[in-house]
Image (tube, rainbow, N blue to C red):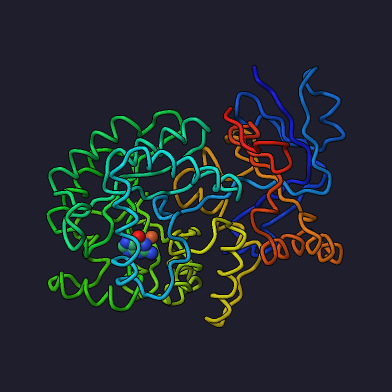
Length: 444
Ligand code: GUN
Ligand code: FE
């Protein structure tokens, strides 16, 4: 049996910080040992007592002063858009035409897809993200390239082939029939292979005919356990276009609901321009909203109303997404920073506990993965990251003034980025070590 121990201060939730526990839900257990056996967390406890009972020869990676967190979960991101981060000047619909579609067209070349998939996975791990819900392109081989690289690292990823049969360049469209057939083949090939999970991925209502959306809904019902991911109410012009394209539907979300695309494991990106009926539908169906603050700010899409989504009488599941390449950072720390500011502009305050929850334990719960990932707890897969409060001279200076670890974490969310991630463990293996000489990445 492969055993390893990781020593440091563990960040843990004793409940949902959006619930009655509030910010007290987040606790720090100082100087703990996390014992990992065959990729699964076997025990967590005080280092002092656990060291004595470790199986002889167990390696111990000690990170004094660091915070051990569950690996970050990114609920909405596009790997083919890595090459166009920061493509500036336009709002959503013009941005798609000017930058996104040309970039995605380049993925007709399988070698390009493999190259970008490799770079993308490394950037995720460098940022401390160990699970993501990822859009590939319309090309089936873009999915193969992504999952193959994820399999090499052993990361738990959710991904799928983009479906679009209209309102996109001809070299990027499929048909309702071909998109369904290719997705079914990819599900058979990848869903449940190792740690990989498939997401049926109709891009968004404007680029999918009703026939294609309905076919996607049928495919989802035929494959329990798979996900659905798409975009929803991101931008005013886009939302108005959907009303024009689907005049018989009562709202943008109703288009998806009518096609059978709402429910547990349905992830809707953005959800900025939502009605009360839309939030109620998400609550009723158990659908998840991916809050993508850096993207919504970059494209000028609007301000997500997190605390409206989380309203106690009909709470909606929410997780945090980077939405690269419209988003501006791989780092979920930076995404929390922007989520904090977006909440402030809406007259609300996002606590440090709430922010971390949305990118870790809460995201795992929202995605029905909390039996597997999202917490440093016995029985869960050992996706663990090491956050370094002294990663930069400024962080070292600033965090020395913190009165407690919640404040330290808050400062990490403000000033931190990939530099603050000292190491990323995937199923107990340190696949990324910031300070390793030469290549900081290794395959297990
Ligand atoms: N809506 C449809 N496609 C996209 C995309 O690639 N990025 C964003 N941000 N919104 C979209
Ligand atoms: Fe997106």
